[in-house]
Length: 94
Image (cartoon, rainbow, N blue to C red; front, side, top):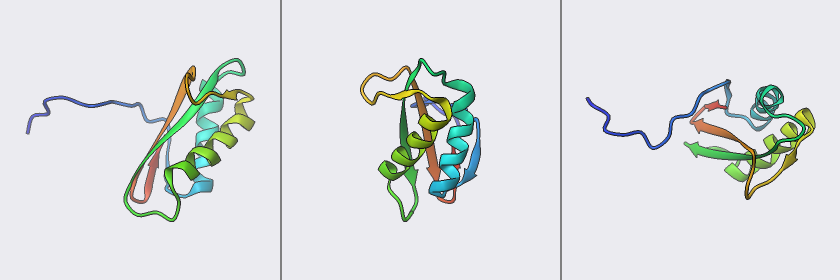
């Protein structure tokens, strides 16, 4: 099978269970080493599968955890950095 194109390719810095608290903890850990105090950031989440939380729930929880860990500001319109969270059934990739 040949792949004609890739819509987007993202590096994965962490993998965890698809649970809000777990994702928030891992996202804060990853972001604290990649986002400085002077950077702005946003969290973008894509989910595949059934979950008892929404993508917005993850964006809010992970964003709050990252903000506390990195000391940086949220900018949803024009962030300096974006933390992508991809959820595939029971696994989350940050």
